[in-house]
Image (cartoon, rainbow, N blue to C red):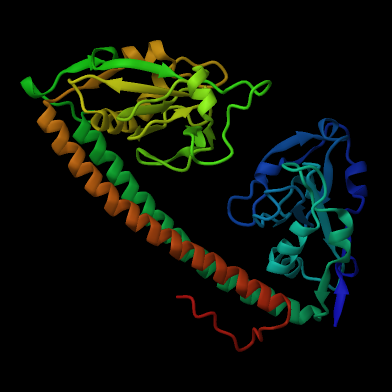
Length: 410
């Protein structure tokens, strides 16, 4: 037998305890970025009551807060409010508040809203324009939940606390291992390209980028009005944005393709093969990629064409290793800006070409091994995430007898 969720919890109820606070009393403050389903949940921020009296959602200890907006909702970032200052909190209006009734365990309720049916059906119920869609109040109220007695809810919650903790520990170990591998690779590339240990004697010299390049270009986005400069298929020139910088010095899929008109009109001139691309502004400023085919990109991307003094791939890996240096030294307004003048003056190490080529060969062999290992770890993490949600779903829907179950995750 199923019950509607509104019979297990009050949905977005009033919080009279908040109204009884003095204007200067502080409460826990939770913007959306602090709401997580795990140890990342942040309930340490505080605000005076007067600052959050209007325009914020109110809740109290024991409530389950559920993000209502995409993509936070489908990420399963629901949390139990606990340890709130004075027992009261205020947070983002993008939260649904579920207050468990006396016959409902809050942990069980949180697992219900982390289950696959709740998340997948919630996505189909989204309302609003693309990019700003929300789960409506009615969906939450009417969601069917298995009618399970309180004691059984507690057993289910105990079981899931233990099993999901075990899965999470395994996932953390794999993430830590991956981070260690990438950290070691980063140090190796820094050392090999001269960013960590400079080459000595006559084998290396530090030169500004302008001495080792033949051209530095920054592209632009074609105007949206007038002629159509983007092609309908992949026959045109690939056009990249920062999202295409996927790891190492690799490029992922282009965001779009330019039509032949755009290239013929010179609206967005091409990046030449054997160029080094660098993101010049924004959250991903300093990211680097190597280009081995004709392409173009938006106004955030600069292309560097090298001369005979330096291999393009060697320069790409060196700038990749120097990203932290670049961001520390680059001009900064509200965002770091790697502009062309700064880039031309940035010093790079220039060993002999033969040495550069040997270094690139070693780095790329290590990167291939690292990428393969990273892919394998990602597959393991995906399987652990699937296993975690399968356990939650089976337990809260009554398909799993938790008194005899063993997850098999070790």
